[in-house]
Length: 317
Ligand code: CP
Image (tube, rainbow, N blue to C red; front, side, top):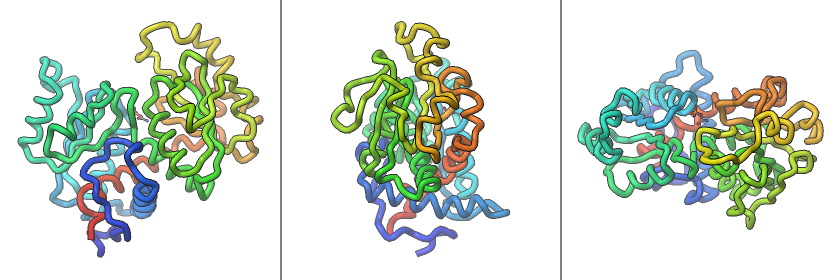
């Protein structure tokens, strides 16, 4: 049944919130990715506007800095004709000491359909889903999950490689502080990829050692991989000395052209952004033909369109 100009998928979508990748099944992930392919087609039209979510209201509540995620949710909402407003911590009453729960309860009193939340505390989105009436989308909660990032990464890999199953993926960098790594570990292992995590021992948690390979030697971890996913060094989350210097870090864990040659010849490079050029990734790699970094950003809009569409009834018969 078409809703606006988007064809409803065959499988029903039953979830009220998108809080993480961990609870999702392979079928649910595939449904979001297949729906995002339809959304991508709308983005390629000269007139990028469909009436699918007309009359629906979305609040984008960003309590932590963002460029890509916030802009792409806003773009997704506009293309789907939803009404939306964006609130940031600076300039809101959070700056006067209002709690997250009070902030959200007050926004809910204005009857939005969905609240998209980014917060520095792990578990913030789950907390709101338990305590509020609105549908909640997690746009990144502390070092916990960033589900739409992993979904846009998966869409980008499916476009580039035609599949996710069987791909050899190295996730490299500040794994310890990375919600992007966590969501991608859940997604890639569920979808049948072979994942290696690579970081200095201080930034390499053991918690996923039952489902991934751990290797703190980058020159070994990169050998023969199909995908290198670089992570930002999150110095703002570091409470002690996890690395010696950024120069030393780049020497051991920076992705350079010389290192990239050890991967497969058709290797692709992902990075969620923002990049620390010259730290985790050399500029010539970031701008090379192997880099899909800007394709990830484009696909972020399509994935966020798909998520909003499914949560607001597009996946129900
Ligand atoms: N990838 C990502 O979450 O980027 P932003 O922090 O700019 O949203």
